[in-house]
Length: 159
Image (cartoon, rainbow, N blue to C red; front, side):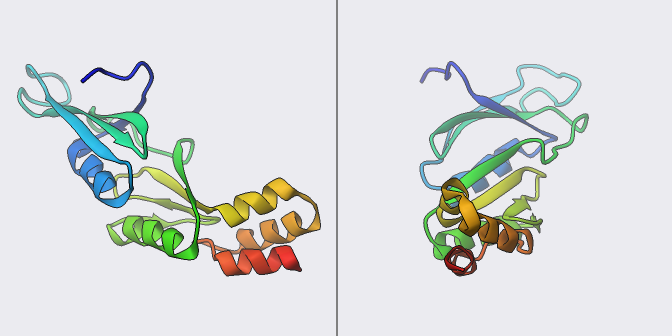
């Protein structure tokens, strides 16, 4: 197995392995590829503890790093997941929020490790792309939502 030329590195305190396992169980085309243990003691972990986890998240090469408590996550970084239906939107949203995560606004939520997710139905993205009055109505509808309601977005587009 070769290391990807470019990958997303996500800093965790100590739970990189648990987080990546959850992602692999939740999202299609997600696989934990390898777990690397610290070869010696270091400031953030002891020898033999999980240091990094290589994984693909929906086919995006990622590395989860157990780097200790020095850095916290923010909405400045998020994964955006495009969904094709309300059922798919509900499935991802409920998995994240129901596993110790928290809801935010406009299709955003945060998992229990602090990673932000945008669970975005294609109906919303397509409305924004189309522009015009339908996009304005869809945007205004979205602003009052936490989890995106596909039927409400489609109704807003229609006027």
